[in-house]
Length: 177
Image (cartoon, rainbow, N blue to C red):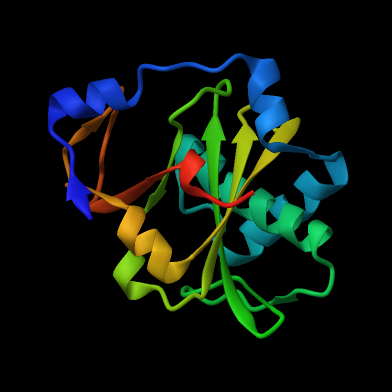
């Protein structure tokens, strides 16, 4: 694992892809009204009204990502553990979802508790902030993820976002499609 300087962080976010290139590079997934309804019901069941509107939107994206995974892999058994979300083919899968404004290169997924999670794989989904489109970014096994992560300290600036906790960051391009 490596830690980026502020200057390296700025360079980390410079390159852009066109929307067409991004759609061709990552599998596009459809988000239906029914899927959003299921995700919202699960959100309300597990988390209730304890979050602000912004936190609600970010956390709802996580539930939408889980619903997308369940649709893609109907044989996966939902577990709802802090350490992982599903079991598929005897492997523990943690779903990581992120919201994006528009697709571009060098997007990242944040993993706040890498060392605390006991999963075999991370499966990553990017969701457009309109909740109309999503992209399967890919998957990565736990050990490989640990080697490809960048350490982000609480308070570090990641582009225009300030890290709220110590986290680990992996670029989308590191995931297997």
